[in-house]
Each structure stands twice: as structure tokens, then as C-alpha cells.
Length: 110
Image 1 (tube, rainbow, N blue to C red):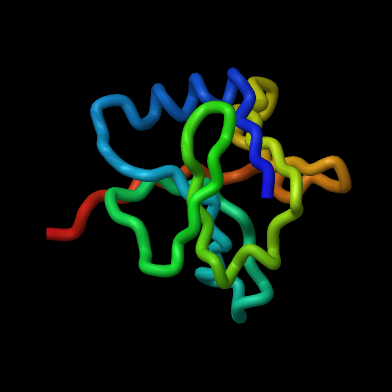
Image 2 (cartoon, one colour):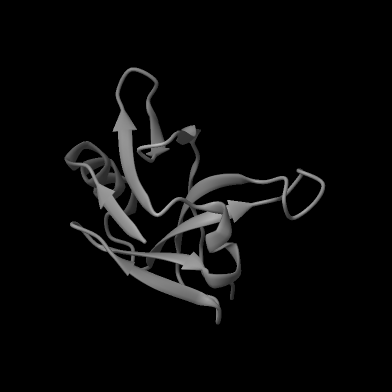
């Protein structure tokens, strides 16, 4: 899998995670969707990785995806940021996987 992060997306990620330690994940989020195949891709910044997360090197930083969820992603993807919609986007040459991708920063549980 090949993932590229645009300069606009990298800048926004850096702004929103400044001063925090953690990992950037593309998460297949199924909360409120009903079942595992009805999900939406979101961008998460997490303090810890899950045991089944696998890493993908990008032009900017490492991105993690749950191994069992890789089937929901395309082989080549771009993480971008749209100033027009003030949102992250996940695109591939075949499609827009999420044009209004959420960015979730989670805190470490005590």
C-alpha cells in the first residue's frame, strides 16, 4: 500500500498534534454504522497502537492501519486537506474514499 500526504494535510496534522506524542492512523470507524462492513474512514491521532496495527511509510510520516481493515482501503491513496471545506480528504486514483474525513485526537487513558 502506498500513501502520500500532501503539504496542506501535513501542515494541518502538525498544527492539530503540536506538543503531543502519538501515532497517525487511518481508522475504519464503524461506531454508529451498524456492522463492520458499514464504516467510514477517519484520521486518528492515538497515544498507543493496537496489536494488529501495521505501518506504512509515507513521504511525511508513518501511518498505521489495522491489518484486518486493509481490505477497505485502496492500493494507492493520498491524504489531503481542503481549505474550501476545512476538512481532510482521502483519495485514490479510482475514487474519493472520504471527502470529509474526521480528524480525531485521542488521549491516553489513565
